[in-house]
Image (cartoon, rainbow, N blue to C red; front, side, top):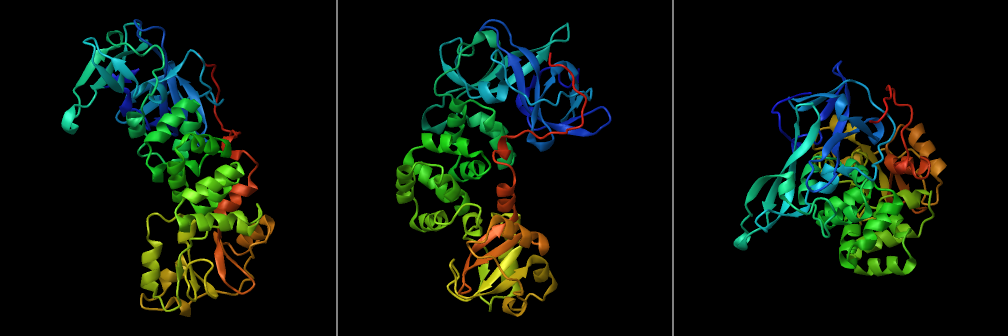
Length: 422
């Protein structure tokens, strides 16, 4: 393998693109797999975990890695497309070693924040050194950092209680919530709990929305009830309502009582609708404007960075009140229409309202048919008195159309030649 320098600190590898010899990207590096034999023997590097098409994680033996250089990883092009499953004798560097509390030779304790691998004369790769930071001093000062040999510290051959997640989370800063959710799915329940404890409420809410229901319930169940309520309040109301439906009724009611009153009201309302109906899938917080708002105001609302693309695709024009359920619904203005009109034009002058919009009781099939027929990515949901109740977006429809448990399923049909795992 060609590398620069010869000793590689592994935190610089996470997220790097992995290319085959022809220059085609085959995935991204997500972790490094090592075999921890004892506290005295340096662990051997077995390979890397690569995330390929469909967010599947596969194992790439280190012998198939030909170069780690210039911000990329080059392979021989041979990938085993079977999903990576960690063996009992294997340890994940980012998932399990980072943030481990260890004891230094002088008896002080510290936290592992990076790990270095190096090649021996036989061209085998081993973990030789650890970057360790001592516990913080008084007055907020950071503790001293040390680079030590593997056999100079204790606490690595067995899992330490209370392992943190600060440095592991640093490797995930640039990952999308769905990719972090996929990474957490591969970890042990204990490690997921430790990571959840250090995530901000907003980040955890975004990640929970991308997780299978059983893992959502698992993580929510280990949070303090007040924090669980705060996280639920940061989730999209429709996702929070779906998650509440998976909890025991007493637990759900307790959490609703701890939530912000407005957030809880939205979730309670959504929980009254049947699953696989427009009401059960809709979000109650679309972009709603009065008819005398200008195109410039509408574009300013669409630009909000926290909006999902599907929600930002359409503005909904209603009479006051503008919170759902609104006053009389007048119609929609699509994003492209906003771009075509002068900024001073009133949105009420350019609304479209010539479609029979779905009701809360409309079925999944009816909603998906309307989205397909009119080439839309979001639909208003109205009642018989023409009040806007919420909006169904295409991602929520797909979530219900895909097979149950699709977030945990494999993506089949990846074109690649398989090699045996060594």
